Length: 457
Image (tube, rainbow, N blue to C red):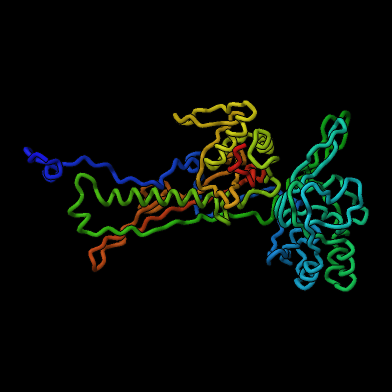
């Protein structure tokens, strides 16, 4: 190797001024949910959602416990059945849970046939069951789908003359628990609390409701002459739901030596704070999706949860999700779900359109943008969910909640407070974000659940 004749680059860099980037952070995403939600100012930290009084109750899901291949229903979860709602005798509920019989159903097997007597309620622990009816031209049609945690046939517990209005057929292998009307009546003969509860159900006068389960408003239209105009009033829910602002906090620490000596060409404190705020905003979006108290996935009404017809998210599934609400503003989906939907469109020779949102070209379906959101979880079974929502207070949609104007605020509802300098010369800042979300009416939000994202053919 010839001798070196000039200064090497490694040595030259010791005298050169490098060009630096600002600190980069891979966790930062587009956070479309935070951008697209209309944010409502909440004074006092609490937002109350007032609704009309509704008589529809007991439409939740049932929870089970599994021990090996044995499945049992949690006794208190039987209170999700309309006939057992508000029934508080734990001993009787425990006996009913023990009387539930486990059955393994093969794919394609019929659990109940249309027109047959309904004498049992089915609790679906695992699997998918289709509701099969007759179309307008006599052909077979799918009326809906039941999935994990659903129940059907519950009218059999209170109506001895009930019949199946549709055929229930397993789409996949299913594990179900059945509770017969005979077992319920047998226990009622020995348990006074259950007998009185069932008798009370039969004595409740039928309430007039609209198709959404809300108390009906009496009106008359199209009359002639001097017909008597009906009297009415709009009744309200006496116990409306209240949403309290949630909080995400962290303490940012910066050594005073760093803040004093290493602030050129970039301010170290500002960069530390910028990355901390980004992390808080990422956490905020995660909570808005997944939080058990106010997260969109956990608070979607069960009547607005759909199952894909063929596992993978197809155009028909997206159309059904859209049809459940008026004025849908956006879809939210994991990037893998968006790719799976694109594959299904490719199979049919369809090309989803795109729309311009703030200078960004976003894929869309029927003109509704599909925004990526990696906070929506993908399970080990390679399934995820797709969210569709209507937004805004005026539209009775989904809204974000915040309280701006708090002390030391640097962004709406986000503050940075100086906490002092400790004996180790470390400066501390308390970084706090307040937020929540509210669903004003049930049909403002819909979720397509159990979407497969790993199917390639």
